[in-house]
Each structure stands twice: as C-alpha cells, then as structure tokens.
Length: 198
Image 1 (cartoon, rainbow, N blue to C red):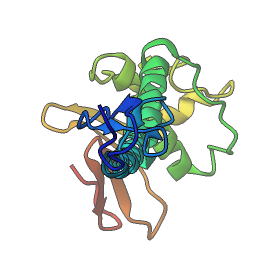
Image 2 (tube, rainbow, N blue to C red):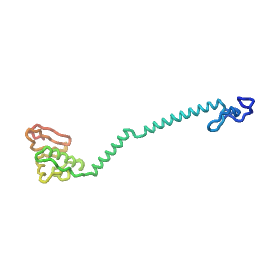
Image 3 (cartoon, helix red, strand yellow):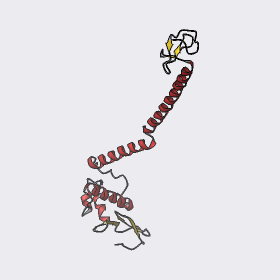
Image 4 (tube, rainbow, N blue to C red):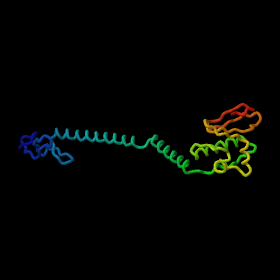
C-alpha cells in the first residue's frame, strides 16, 4: 500500500484517526506516540488545546466554588455568636458568683442603694426561675453584699411584690425636690416630688 500524499512511496504508518496510509515523511507523531496525517494532526492538536483550555476553565470554576464554600465573614460571625451564647449559658447555669462588694457610701447615696438592690432582685430572679423575693432580706448575702451595719439601710426602701409587674421598689423618703423613682422589672416609673407613688 502506498502513501496517501506520495503515491510513489510505500506506506509505513496508518493515521490513528482516518486510517490513511502514510510514508515516514508524512506521518506526524503525537506526544503520546500515535501517528496522524497532516489534517488529523491539526485537528488533534486543536482538540488537545481546546480540551486543556476547557480543563483550565473547569479548574477555575472549581476554585471559585471552593472559595464560596470557605467561611466568609458571615460564617465567622455565626461561629463567634454560637461561642458567645454557649459561654453566656455556661455562666448563667454554672457561674453563680457572689454579688459584687459595695464600694459606695450607701448611707448618703440612697439612689445608688436603690439601683444596687434592684440589680440584686434581678439576679435573684435569674437564679430562682423568675420568682422574686418576698422581702429584701432574702437577698442577703448571696445577691446583695453590704458591709456590717448596712443591712438596716434596706429599711429606707419600700419593696412590694406585684402580681402584674413582678415587684415595685422605691425610696420611702426621696431627697427634697427629687423625683420619686419606682423601679419595676419593666423599667423605671417617675412620680412628681412629694408623691409616694403606688
């Protein structure tokens, strides 16, 4: 059998794609060692180039997908939030810490005493399943830390459990010209100076 392009020469190879007989001069050998005719070699090289471009494009798209799967800012926000919530619940469930020590002169700062006692009542409710004390003396010493002789200062406060609000706490005798503050779990109520509130 003779070469497709040189009829006077004997064929030594056959094209891998079209099976055309080829002489040694006409055979194009691919990197994988397969012989091709000139036309098929061109098509084969274009196909390989096209395939490698497509492979690169596919790899680029895979990288983009992997980047999307990586944790972005929202992923880190979720992780940090979950950790903080877990820590808060750990403190709530297992961290019954003693009340902070009193550092203000409570005998002269009755409003400081009022807000300190309000905070102690709220800590009490937190650890006692949202129940409030029947008397302020129940707060001592676990929820309200007072120095020796300061427990009598609680008598300057009016405390009444309230079935609707939870409790009402106020100073019995606010300073002259001062508004009377009534503290409840819902917030602060103000009454005019000189009125006693509810």
